[in-house]
Amino acid sequence: EVLRYIAEMACELTGSDSAAIYHYNSQTNSFTPAALLGADLPDMTGTQVRPSGMTRRALNERRTFIIADAQTEPGINPSLRQTKIRSIICTPLISKGQAVGVMYVNSNQLNKYGDNEVQLISALASQAAVAIENGLLFKRLAEGNDRLQAVLNSTREGMMMLDNSKRIVFTNAMVGKFFNRAPADLTGRKLLE
Image (tube, rainbow, N blue to C red; front, top):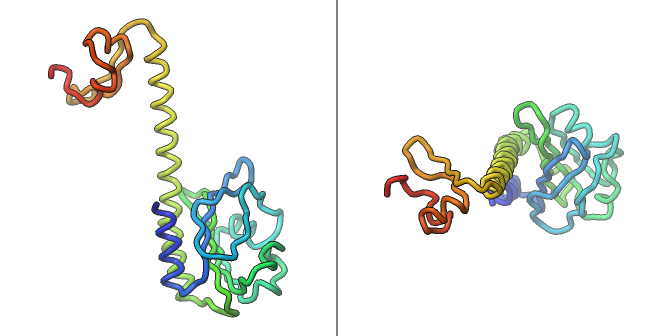
């Protein structure tokens, strides 16, 4: 998985103890874990973004924040104070001008991060945003294909869809009966094979 690899690289390149990448749903104002790496991470599944705090600021301002001491920072989620995490980089994941997630890189050391680490994490965050966007596009495409297949299967007429090279992309059960084959066996074949 790409996002797990990005989290691993974030930890390795910055010498961090943990990293977390969350998908942000702007409609529900909540997070879904996309990649979690390392121990001592609070469970933020389904957590709504608080009206104030570091994550809200990162999402709204579209910029990265460095926290030198998470135990004394006023904008920190209280659940983080129950962990050993001391230093944090929090960066929004922006794709096509929209916040699609947030990435945290954490250390158990005070004052762990500087400008070099922020540059590295910003570059990785760009890749994570693209990966999340591609995943969402793939999901939408798969849902569209499922809907199209449902329409094809619901009709009593034989229906098939071909690509530009006359290769069968979709077919329904009635076409399968005509060719005496399962529709899945026809998909990917040339029409005149």
